[in-house]
Length: 131
Image 1 (spheres, one colour):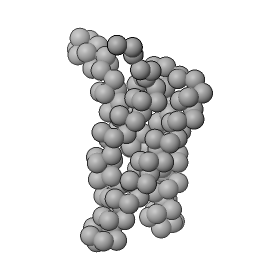
Image 2 (cartoon, rainbow, N blue to C red):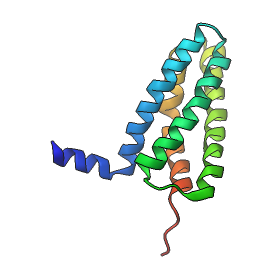
Image 3 (tube, helix red, strand yellow):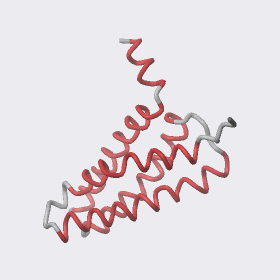
Image 4 (tube, rainbow, N blue to C red):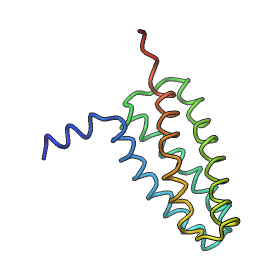
């Protein structure tokens, strides 16, 4: 079991998936709670902002295990601006255009955005290595 743990934690992408799953669970619960009082776009937006803070902390300390200095502090929110635009557009397509469930929509957004988000986040936290 310890060997499996060591192999899993060596992979940045696996750590990214684990931290993303944790962040997704937390922000999805926030989204569902807010949905009781606010429209889906407002609920999604507020849950999304809270997820940015959690994601930054997890990526910095668990996934990439480096701060990245001022560069990461400034660039990290841009990753999520891009992801947010893609996400809200996908959610709008899912709910308003396709007439599908607004409670399932955010999960579809996450699945579609994971690869792009990983690549952008890696760019923020990992310095280019010289050839």
